[in-house]
Image (cartoon, rainbow, N blue to C red; front, side, top):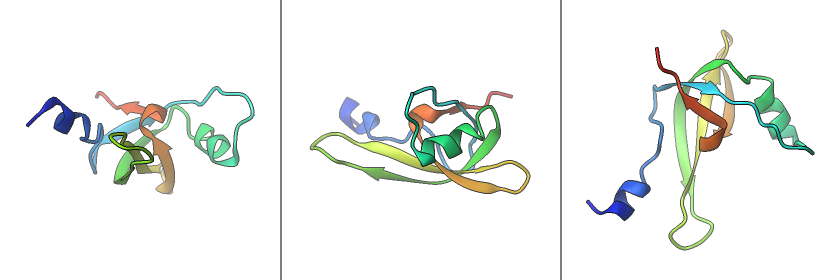
Length: 85
């Protein structure tokens, strides 16, 4: 395995517990506003996808189940952090 192969791995895996981080940018989109509603809440990664808009760039997008209703939201890697119990 090369360093490049390691860089293409997702940071989070299905079933992993995460905490949603607040998005503090001005001019929030509706998606960012919705993510902020769950800031600080515990969630569980239910799925993930990757996109590659440019050669050798890969971005992971995660579906995360949050709150007691198990609401599914879509977040980027930098919008969550691992839950350390």
